Amino acid sequence: MTTTQTDPPTRPLGLPDESGKTDALPIVFSAILFCVLSIWMATASNGFLEADSITHYLARRFALSEPAHLVSVWTRPFCVALYAIPAHFGGLVGTRLMSLALVMAMLAVTLIVNRRLNFTRAAFVAIFLLTQPLLFAHSFSELTEIPFALLLICCFLAYQRKQFLILTLLATLAPLARPEGFGLMLVTAFALLAHRRWWWTPILPLGLVAWSWAGWHVYGGPSEYPWWRWLPENWPYSGDSAYGHGSIFWLSIILPAVIGPMAFPLAWIGACCSLSLRARVRERGLADAQVLPGSKVDGSTVLDDRSSEASPAKRALPFARFFHDHDYRCRALIALIPLGILAGHSVLWALGKMASNGEPRYLLIVAPFWALLAAKGYEWVCNHVGVRRPLLWTIFAAIAPIAANFAYPSFPIGPADDDKLSDQVCAWLETQSDLRQQYPLFGASLPHIFVQIDRDRLDKKHVVDSSRKTVTAPPPGVMLVWDPIYSAFNSDERFVVSEQLLRDNGWTPIARFDQQTRYAIVYLSPSPAAK
Image (cartoon, rainbow, N blue to C red):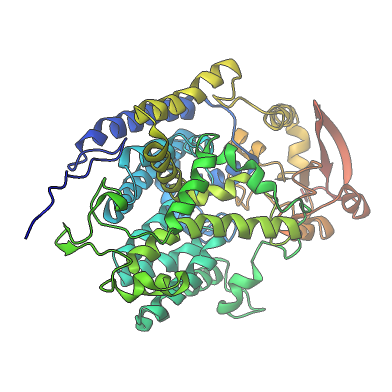
């Protein structure tokens, strides 16, 4: 019997050695560079990424003194609780540094997911995650996308490990972080049923139950409805969005600005690789085609798909394989999860539903998955096109936005027109001591004002909300600042107030402030406060 000498397979271009040690240096370098730049921006930016950031910051800033913030439906209990201590003791900078810490935690979990699945090269994953432009901007912001992205990738890791109790406990917190959490909770319920772990499903709604119960008690136990109706009664998102609607392709068009121009085409290539039905092996760094059928990999025999010995799942149709092969299912979900978020938000924006305003930041909640897909796509290009020194090109991709920022400065974030408008209003208020004695209560839809005066919007002794209820049944002694953006547009229709509604209910305008195209008008309630 003769045997044929076969040369050992060569390692695909661009992949690390078996130990993976070559990836440590670029990962650490990327993380340090990211942290240095993010901390710089957190301390140097005296403006906000967007107005919603201010509302979230104010809720976290005063959460320890006002329990209502911890159950707020709009600012989300999970996110408020996560940031409450840093915001209380560190103010705005402490809040922003907390976001950076969450990004670093997200990076660590994403690398664990990648290593357990042997999906692609770790250095590529780290670089394509940390070079996402919108992720960098949110690493020193105050919004909810970063906490939810971390929660989502942790859920995926728990599912990958088949730790269904941990998955369930994380999923029950998801609606307390963002509206997409309801979808995650439903998908988790389906996974528990599919894996015959149905006995964990009663845990899933406990987060919502606790939220509704706590909210009802914090707000004084409203007698008009029982505690279990508190959450739906206070749900702030209107079915029909006040922001209108737009093209269903808008989020797909803007995706390069979210994940980076270089990552955009690579993510689509990575999605095709992720969904591919080619035979896969569990040896880091070796392509399927370069492993000989019958050889040993991780203690198991690699089978040729054409062989009669191949498992039924490998010869099955894609739909069947998805339900029979856990590794393939996890690989497929790396593509299906971000594409599902992209499709879902595109439809909501096109239909003008659920208070969607087509924000690109919605796609940030799946930032780890975009990074995994882009890294996989880049690995495929390196192996099939013959890219030499692939890490050098990814480092260039990381440095290029920094150079672009020097040419067209976007960071640090400076004061916007709204900030300058708030400065005018606050400066005027300081000169109106006599008028403030007659109108001691204050209200404003422009959130920047409350940052300027460092006051809680739920301070009932000095502040009233700017809702329709306040406008149509005005208490005495209220000074209200109205503006044509924040007053006229809101995800909660109860806070949408027109200037005509104010005038129809007896409010009197006494001052107007202009800043470029923005303006604000100060109104007084029909009667002053009683002496």
